[in-house]
Length: 288
Ligand SMILES: [Zn+2]
Ligand SMILES: [Zn+2]
Ligand SMILES: [Zn+2]
Image (cartoon, rainbow, N blue to C red):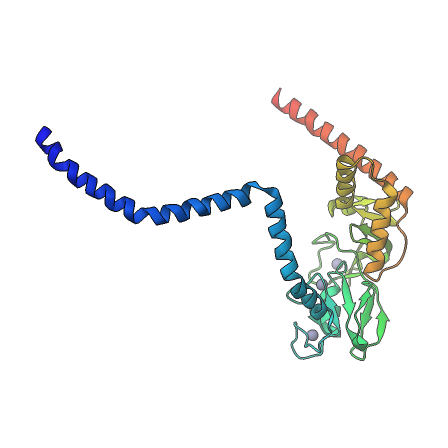
C-alpha cells in the first residue's frame, strides 16, 4: 500500500499542476464575470440604469413604428382578398382589414369590437351602429347585443331567424354601447322568443333596472370591486369618467349614469353574498 502511494503521488502532483496551469485563466475570467454579474444583479441602481439605457436606445425605433402604424395604406380585405379594405378592427387581429361587405357579415355578430373607418386618408373610430360603404359613405344600422340564445323555440327546423329587438344600453369596461336586444322568430309557426332577466344573467350580464333598459357586464362590477379593495380612496366618479373616456375614444356617444351603476353594483354584491351563503348551506346539509 505504501509503495503504491509512493508511485501515485508524483502522477497526482503532475496532474494537479497541468489542471492549475490550464484552468487558471478561465478561473480568473469566471471570477471576474461572476463579480460583475453579481454586482449588476445585486445593485438596483445599475439594473435601473441598464434598463433606462436600453429604453433610450430603442426609443427612435419605437417612435418610428408608432408613426408607421398610423399611416393608412391601401390594403385588400383580409377576408375576401378581392375588395379594398375600408374598415380596420382593433379586436380582430388576423382579420383586421375588411371591406364593407365582409365587415357587415363579420361584425354583425361581433358588435362589441372597436372598428375604425379608413376612408378619406384618415382613421375615424366608429360606433358599432355605423358601417362604411365601398364609396366611403357612412350609413347607420342596428347592432344586436351578443348573448346566449336558445337552440329551439318550436318544433320547426331551420326556419328560426334572429331579428332586432328593442333598444338597450350596454356598459362594459370599454364604455357604453347603444345596441338592440336579440329576438327569435319562427317563419313556419310564428313562435317568438324575447330575452328575459334570467337569459341576461345566463349571458353574464346584470340589469341596471328590473326592466333592463340598461345592462351591465358583470366583469365591470368585478373590476370596480377589485379597484375599491386595492385602493379604497379611489372614487366611483373617476371610474365612471374612465368609462366615458373609453366610450368617446372609440367613436361612441352617451353618458354612463353613476347612480344607476352604483345601485346595480350594490345589488350584484348583495346577490353574490346571498348566493355564496346558499352554496354554504347546501354544502353543510350535504356533508352533515
Ligand atoms: Zn371582403
Ligand atoms: Zn372585429
Ligand atoms: Zn316554428
